[in-house]
Amino acid sequence: MILRVNPTRMELLRLRKRHQLAKRGHKLLKDKQEGLMKRFIELAEQYVRYQRRVSRELPTILADFVGQTAGYPVDVVDILSRTTSTELDVRVLTQSVMNVPLPKLTFSVEKFESPTFSGIDGAGIEASLLHLYRLLPSLMKVAEIETGIRLMADEIERTRRRVNALEYVMIPNLEETIRFISSKLDEGERATITRLLKIKEMILSH
Image 1 (cartoon, helix red, strand yellow):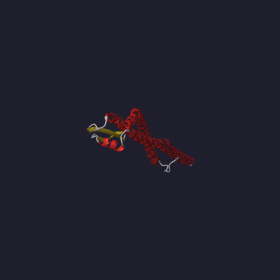
Image 2 (image 1 turned 180 degrees about the vertical axis):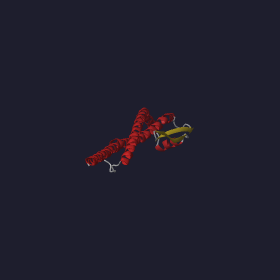
Image 3 (image 1 turned 60 degrees about the horizontal axis):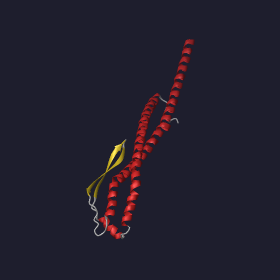
Image 4 (image 1 turned 135 degrees about the vertical axis):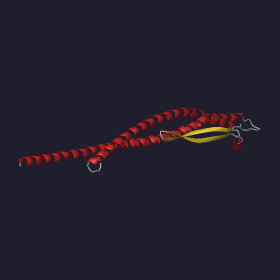
């Protein structure tokens, strides 16, 4: 589509500069898109590894815990869950990857004490809780990577739309308009030369 501009030499120079900037911007965005896709694939591969472990171990841990507590009343299980004094310090940081702020979860154990199981056989319950605690880093990694994948996918989509807008709309429109103005200017120069030749012939005839 030809842009609505005056077909002047000044406008032609301005559009050529815009065209050069658009081409450079398109290349930069294409490079960014490729970098984002590479990082996205890396995150997806990491997610699969951690998710497989969580999917394999978490149902077993929960089923084991349910089995260990099935013989106790609900209020007793609730009391047992309150006896643990484990404290975790969880922090959410961000790391910029190609201008995308990806979350980085870190945690440390401030205090860990096994639950107190007075009067009942709590060895099985304690083992289930310890198993769950050992799985906690993988659980947090799954949450971290899953959020990062969503953010990366959104940025990839935004970048793709900008690349397409430059590649299929702005750059073709600029090129078509530049050709149109160049054609108009060439046509005007040819008309001017023709008039000058006619004036020269008239002067020579006299």
